[in-house]
Every structure is written in C-alpha cells, then in structure tokens.
Amino acid sequence: MRTVLGPTDRLAIIVAMPAPALEDLLEAAEAQLLAMVRKLGSGLLRFEMAEDLAQAVRLRALQAVDSFRYEGETAFRGWLAQLVRRTVADRHDYWTAARRNGGAMVRITQLGPRSTLAGGVDPAGSSAGPFTFAERRDQLELAARAIDALLPRDQRLVAMLQAGKPIAEMATVLDISHDAAERARLRAIERFQAAYRLLAG
Image (tube, rainbow, N blue to C red):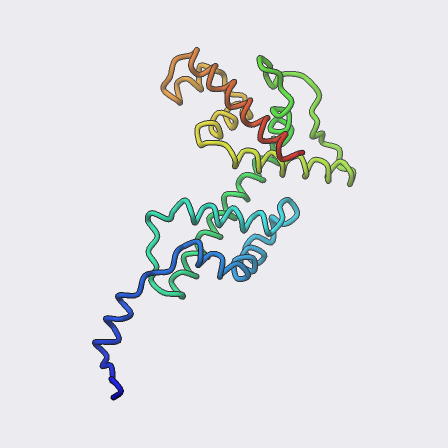
C-alpha cells in the first residue's frame, strides 16, 4: 500500500535533511563564482587572474564557515555575491595603494635584515614602457599574493613598513615594547620575503 505524505510530513523531512557542507556548495558553484568574479572584478583582471580572485573568495568563505547557515540555494548565491563584492573592493583598495606606492612594497622583498626603505634602487620603477609595466604588474601581483599568505599582524607590520612608519609608532600601534616591535618587524619581513620567493619560484 502506498503511503501519501501530507504537507507537515514533507516539511519534517526537509527540516531533518542535513545542510550541505560549505566546501561542497563552493565546489558546485565554481562556474557561477568565476562568472561573478569576471563581472564584478573586471577592472582587476589586468592585475590578477579571475581564478586567483575566485580562490580569494573561497578562502574568505571558508574562514566564515562557523557563522555560515545554509538557507537555500538563492540565499547562498546572494551570500556568495556579497563575498565577491567585498573581496573585489579589498583588492581594488590594495591595487590603488600599490599603484601609489608599489615600489616600496616590492622593495621590501629585497631588504636585508636591518635595512630600511630609505635609498636603494626601486625595482618597480616608474618607466611606462610595456615591458616595465608588465614586470611591475607581475612583481606587485606576487607581492599581493605573498601578503595574503601572512598572518594579520604580519600584514599590518608590512603595511606600516611600506608606509614608512618608524619602529616607535609600530610599537604604539601594537601595544608592545620597542624591542618587541623591532623583532616582530624583522619576522614579518622574513615571512613576507619567504612567501614572495616561494611564489616567485
């Protein structure tokens, strides 16, 4: 004999079904994510590949896994689009700053342990030739990816170094001693340089 389920029974079954894992949802939405990135981040594609931007969105999504609640496909796509917009906005801010002071960021990758940004040759020079622009773009892209690989405090220290902040100011911002700030700065530089070299092959 065939059992007919009423509306209440069907609702109970739906509620009892486990929510799909975020990793599975992201994998299933890979094509849509790339399409969103290409549409919303089209202005960034001269600096970064769409696949790299999509990966940044996926990482951001996975970092929010503890607060994520699946509420259906439509809500998930809306949530994903929000992440794309935030990631694109962050990367746009980064590249805007990098264009203003890109040489300093790339120069950090070549600093000695006790060096500062004062003096020296800027490897990301301001020449507008096509080869130089392509080389500079590649250097900045590697630096951006290396920055993303760092812990937040190291990212902050590298950003302060890029902006020319003195050790005393770093110590104040981080609420640590001058000596601790100096050690933290050196470790941040080392990690940034190691990540840059790894990405550069």
